[in-house]
Figure 1 (cartoon, rainbow, N blue to C red):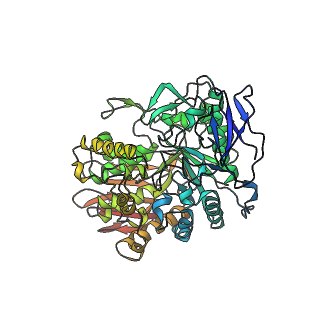
Figure 2 (figure 1 turned 90 degrees about the horizontal axis):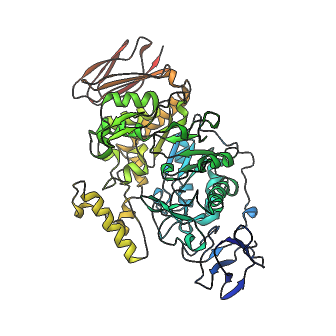
Length: 568
């Protein structure tokens, strides 16, 4: 590899290999500097700007010593891939499983994930979504404060570890999704601003400086992210990318960065966005004025399900809670499509009319919705077994692309809490104190909040795989397996919104979701209810929980009961 680096304002660049400093040629007319030597695979190197301390390569392929250490050359062409016959699946018909590498297994590594791939394949999921795996500070963390976007985390197993995981996933018929963060970078080990104008003071984000995507010298900044997306698909054979918080990607260019990412990645992998905008342009086709992203997360669906099942109305849940909200989410994903949102104190969203349901992901739990609670409680900590099964049925019988969060399928007893391992004591203290202030404002006792910097917070968030052989975990796991099999058997991803009919009774608190081949009925009221499942269902019960009696077109359901019946 011939080292190159973009540093348009530098007066002098040196390549640093061990104790040796070698001058680099440049800059060219775009601000790039090039070394006069070639480094072989495994070589470690850094750059010095104007005689300053050595810094890692902004495009470092591997950081074996962490965010502050030297970069290491990786020869991607030497990896012995065996997935030549692999056909990348589309999101049509997908069932996605989100996991965090560090807490998914006892080992907390890519190899640890491999050990449990048989479980995922047996569950019936089709896509494994990895929370960010690029280098972040410390030994453990969520990954959203990463800085070396091109380097798989050394603690997880580095480049070869990730390639081995992708290889084994493909062998088992599982596609791989990698979560990438292009809206901000973490504070620790973030040296990009020393190399060039990667950031701008013209905008601000909740996480600090905004990325410079539309100001002077922004072409190379945009290329930094676009090339990164292409790298995951090309060098690691990843099948799709999940784009974190695209509403915080601030770009006024005539061609938005999301469009550019869609153009580059479209032929090689799917793109899934997280967006808080309820703006259908994110996933609308380019020909119809959209950005061309393949799908997006649907927090409205989650909030509608969560508020109905838990009764919580704090924070953004104040905008949800009625059975009609849940029905609207099932019919079109967006509950707020231009309506006034009391929590936001303004109108929010725009109608998604004309978009197919496959453009939206449906879920009852995610890393955000669990981990951003003060104590990291899962839904299994908040509701009874009947409502857990109702949540799973709503997700997996919906017309959307369903997604599960690690351990959800068996009602894991372990929480998923917010944890960090910042080596800078001041930064670690600031994170812990900020977390306490945030939740104190919601009435939580700071003494009850887990400290993100305490190693015990990370350890208690690891899944306990021994639970699978115990009740009530085994029964809930079987429920999820049967739901996924039923979804595939009856092809519930097909039919569009035309195949979705929803009826609710606000006072009695029951809901019926008619999908044509199957109907889902649930009662979350406090008394038995006669629920009309429809004339086309003859009492052939596919799945049931609680007090259930189906007689012709009517199901008698006790409180917190759920049933799925198939058509004649």
